[in-house]
Image 1 (cartoon, helix red, strand yellow):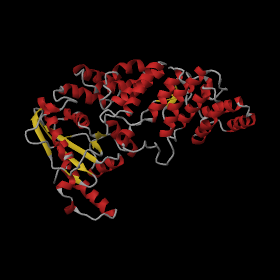
Image 2 (spheres, rainbow, N blue to C red):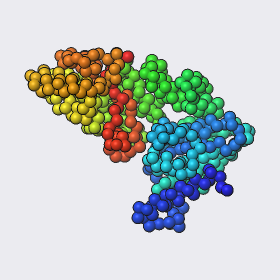
Image 3 (cartoon, rainbow, N blue to C red):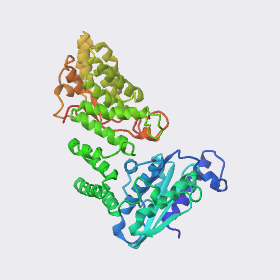
Image 4 (tube, helix red, strand yellow):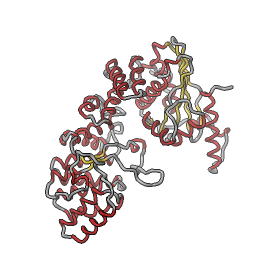
Length: 480
């Protein structure tokens, strides 16, 4: 019986062919020639599954995630768009599947389809503790094609050099233009990120830290990985993320600062750095962080260029609002709303900029737009009531107050956070004459949707399966 590792290819290709026939396309196995099966360029999104431990050495299970992470980094180093471990886990959670590499063949393909991946890379490691054989295969989902088995063998001591050589085979299977002319340098030393000289114990600590059961264990292992390989930016980024999720910015910032902007995690690290500066009420540093991301969106260097993120424009607007640059702030909020018109927080912030600029009449329309998108947002309602009263539209304000008594709604900003002023929780009238207080009501985007990095089109609107927009993680920017 063929091994499960090699059996996946046959099943996946058959599934792909059935899908093509079902859609009315004419074709069969004989039409998928070797030339047709190869991608002509790097277009597409790649999903790397953890390598299976095909040996009897149980304490090598950590290599599954470790080799997967190394494969992702090395493919990214060559310009491919590869889904992260976080992306894979999010897909598994959405499908109600556990975090495990032991899926059936059909399930692996379903996961890739759900993740919108175009190419799947999967593999295994077989080791007796002294030597190791790495195997991998590359599966293109549409049109369906499967690479031959790609294999490299070496000592465990040189495992990362073995993996670097395997990565070259994967790159060649992905795109034949990577199959350089005979005699060209394709050995392991040509990989710089991460280098083939990376110590194996650093990778072990990193992999175990990524999969640890609790934060303290993860922090300890990731710190050790960073100590062993201080120039490797993946452990510092993972550490920064743990602290950022805790909103412990004092601890997060030193780690995030160790991630170079041009590395795959650089945009997210820069974004989280800016958010931390906002939470610490350091508007000048926040402005610098978000401005850097905006500048990269305008870069003529294709390697440096980033897409426009509405969250970045929104947070840059908040930074400038706090610095008293009201007109510039309004421009950024309007750009964020143009990029993602279905997000009510951007409309609220655009209204706050108008109010800060002493233009209450111009604030009504964006507040009404926000209320239409999220009728239960009592913060936006409170702000609109105060704005209408300031304009002498008392009957409209009274009608909204009556509606509020019947339908209390929720505080979209604070979530009941005692550190947010009462006016920000919709429990009192907003002082429209206090620019500083208004600036504190502006809603900070704390999550960066990285989908535009994998898209050449417009920024997709984030929606739930039912078509309703989920609430973004946005709060008032009051220091914590």
